[in-house]
Amino acid sequence: MTLTHFDEAGRAAMVDVAGKAETERLAIARGRVVMAPATLALIAEGRAGKGDVLGVARIAGIMAAKRTSDLIPLCHPLMLTKVAVELTIAGPDAVEIEASVRVTGRTGVEMEALTAVTVAALTIYDMVKAVDRGMRIEGVRLVLKEGGKSGRFEETP
Image 1 (cartoon, rainbow, N blue to C red):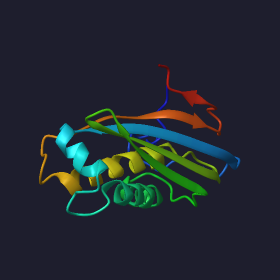
Image 2: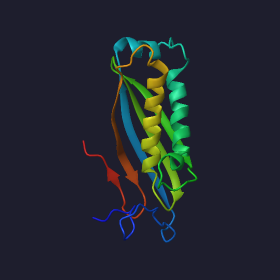
Image 3: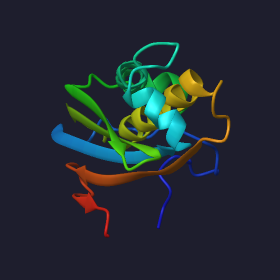
Image 4: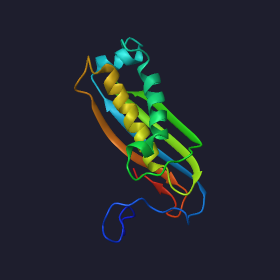
């Protein structure tokens, strides 16, 4: 297997995508924030002092996807056509996060989806850390990728 972000001398390099065809591309990533049940109750009931935790995290995730190339050194700046971030209360102690990102372009949007999930999770942590510093961000991963030369990838259960 050849790593694509290195040149012949082994130095980090941005991938040249000029010769690639523009195709519809989709990536979906997921993760979760695990916390004390009392912390989740604050979020679910809208009693967190900083406001609508899930609403702010959703916006943060969308904004992060759009700025991925500013955060990850070798990512191409992309004109994303769709970013959706969904946050769901899961059980007594977790928020599940899913980000879906689309583009018509020459490179995929896996990093954008992963960045959206991660920043949404960090935003949740930031907004309620005063009551629960023991929260954990877990399971951030790519679950689906479509389009491009490498084709479809789907997480196996």
